Amino acid sequence: MQILFIAVATAIFGELRIVPFGWEFRFGLGSSMFFLLLLLMNNVPMLRTGVVTGMVVVLFRTLTGRSFIIEPSLFWEVLVTHVPAMFYYIAFAFGMSRIPKQFFQSRLFLLGIIVTFVDFYSNMVEIGFRKILIETTSLSLTEWMTFLLVACIRVFFVIGLYANIILKQLQAVHFEQQKRYEHTLSVGASLYSESFYMKKIMDEIENLTLSSYDHYRSLKKERLYAHSKHALSIAEGIHEIKKDAQRIRAGLLKLHNDTELNNEMLLSDIIDFVIRANQQYSKWLQKEIEFSCHLHVNYLTSHHLLLLTALNNLVANGVEAIEGSGSVRIRVSEQRKMTIFQIEDTGEGIKEGELPYIFVPGYTTKYDQRGVAATGIGLSHVNNIVEGFNGEITVNSIEGEGTSFVMKILTAKLKVGE
Image 1 (tube, one colour):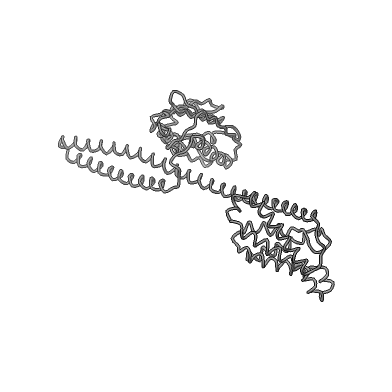
Image 2 (image 1 turned 30 degrees about the vertical axis):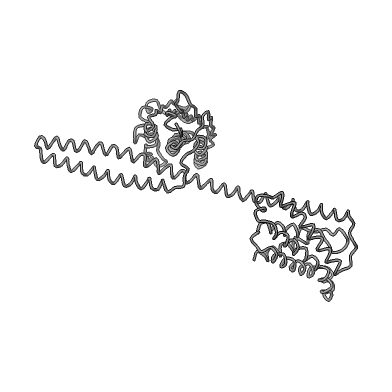
């Protein structure tokens, strides 16, 4: 099917031509189209394609020729005048079949030089058969040089077009891979942050289990057997909850490990991801928000998923706080062996009376259009992540002007090799 497509396309485009010598030899777009399609469909058998294309071109030119249309009885005479063109395509396809396939991808300039001479040689073959089948005048040196020049121009024009097509395809593939990677990274960050949060819950459950068991022993020591038995039952129940939580966390970690993620990321790549994600989020919210980044330190970190979660939460809060249009600025610097992440927005700000409670789990000032409150765990989760690094997070806000969050974490806790 591909061979037939190449043959028909070549025959049609071959009608866009000039006839420089006054006889049936022509410079047309057919040869350029033939070359381009051989590059794009280089898995077809070249020689067979050349034979089929040559036959289709000859038949097409014969049946659409003016002489045949005026006088159909001249079919064989018209056919003979076009037969030499078939040998051009056979010779060209044979030459293409001798070129290593890797030249089609990585050595285009050398390919252009080789194909220029293949094209020139194929024209010589066609003219040779014309001399055998039809009496034609000999060509001068100037005319032969014209052949070579035309061959060079059209070959490199086609290679330029081919390179542009390949570049567009690579860009499309890269864009698709980038989208897939960002989605995987987002899912991985969510899974990892949830497992991190689950670990904190498990630690609290463990402490509660120990407290319940201590309470059981105290009651038993005081011979309050009924109460001690009840306390033991509570401790056992809490212990079962802990085991369920362990199974859930193990499942989350397995899902996270199954995602194809790099073990390390540069801070600059983390910030780029956060900005791209929130640019899409702001468009979804129909807000015009300008994002900017000032990166004064950059290094590899293996804790990229936790940083992604924390920074994405803070930037998303900034996006949500802005009405209509505004800006969000991210600044990353290093002072006194501390990496400092500063996120500033030009949103509505936080009321002074609410500032002491914003990191409390469950506290929220966000309500949807139905008046349903948000979960209120976003900032508390960020706070837990920062505390997990033994860092600190502070907030400054002026109502009506904007908010600034500052996370400070020891560089040694984040940087690979420290």
